[in-house]
Length: 303
Image 1: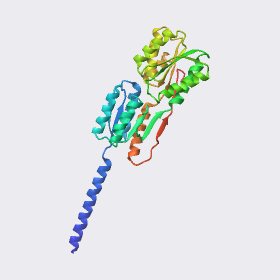
Image 2: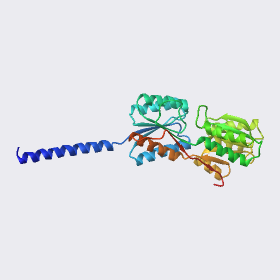
Image 3: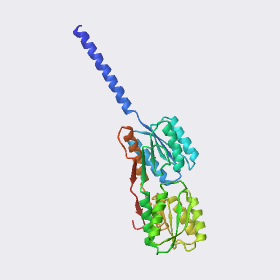
Image 4: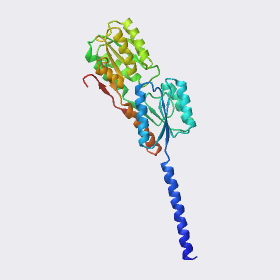
């Protein structure tokens, strides 16, 4: 074989290698596609989580589809089914409650799509990671803050998220533990389904039944903001201290102007970012934590 032919073959081989390398590089650069199924973008907390998801996805070159269940478990399942049809690489899920979340996870499991749960938790199913705040500790922080503001033996109330909310219920558990330890009297415990309007209605009923009430702990800020409206309407703003949980912008504004006594702040934006980072790491072959606890902090007029 002539030297000219050898050089031609070598050049062709180099060209094929270059083409293959380019194809591999293009494959590696192909954007991942995530779906984020969120329970309610009418709630500021979930808006912040979604913003974190979208911003981190953009930073990492990941495409993301955000779908809002609008507090409807059936719509949540339909949204996840839609994501499966779109062949997303991962599902990020903030479910309406643990049971609806389990149904969504089951669908993703069947399609062999990894699931990463951001807050709330699920009752069953295989998930790769749960990213959640220290809810039990946060409930204790709220309880201690309330106990410092009122006298032992005072009447207090507890407004909870919807039944089946396993992880937010830990907030109530922590709060109740501190109330029992400090000699407070929990005279009412009702659910307001995480919604502001229902928080106001529940608070109205509690005030009518317990006119000597001194403090209220609501498991999220939306319900706390509804509660302070009822307290103000009853002319009891100076008497009844209301503490929420989440640290939303509206709650912080209400604390600043003296309507809300405090809130236990989560960092939903960082939670959303961490969800994307965790999913990308997992799909890149890295081992990820099964549960990551995100710290919380007390927000009061003093800090």
